[in-house]
Length: 304
Image (tube, rainbow, N blue to C red; front, side, top):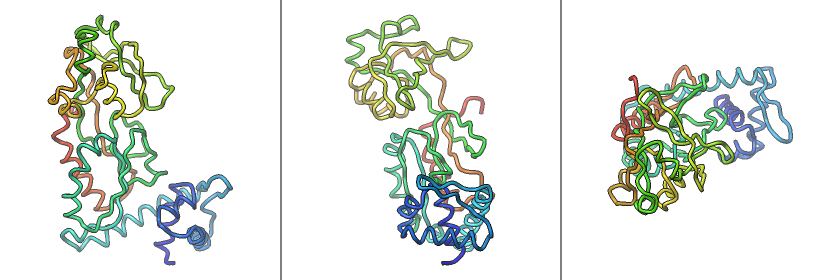
């Protein structure tokens, strides 16, 4: 096994924290993974990984080696395609993550056209509403909605979702149309949390000076965007959601806008990737494509 292959294996083991999971993701025997890491440790003269029966962790030297290996592998990817042109020049695997509804409604329907231009690319698409660990889970880039506070990553702004308030026609007929903050006390909010058991932020609105939140009663709390939307369609309460994501439901008469004067703060959307001296060309091309694809669904970031 050559040194580049060994470095690729070490990087994947380090990111996943497991020889078994790394072997499964690369389609290789577990024994080959262990041999590759031992080979690097012998050549570099240092221990790269702490191994226990439960997990695998990088040593201090392993962390430094990991960062340099990532840079070297990215450089090799770039070098391979530097003098190539056309669709054949982009090759390899892209591992990306994004919210489920964005993938389903916007990205996946457009992927055939993108892949027809770059037929040697292979995409691993993770669809989840949780915040994935970019480095540990081995993602090239992820789309995140909301704030990005991790200083160890690079966040490229795409724009922001304009947020509206919505309910089903059946809900409005049963509970009347809310118009003011005072009206909300007599209504149900569908609560959204990242992790069940966490406290909901409540209903957000702008009072003319600043954004405020007000607690509201609710019979259901969900932790996925799809369940959030479906609960609203079922008449369980009010949601605050991106306008672009429910436009088709408004047109179909399945949802109506409520309390239009109580506007929540727009939600920023980012493409996030790990700090890296040179970002591979396939990642750059993919992120440029995503940015163009998302433009019709976003507004300018406040203050931009």
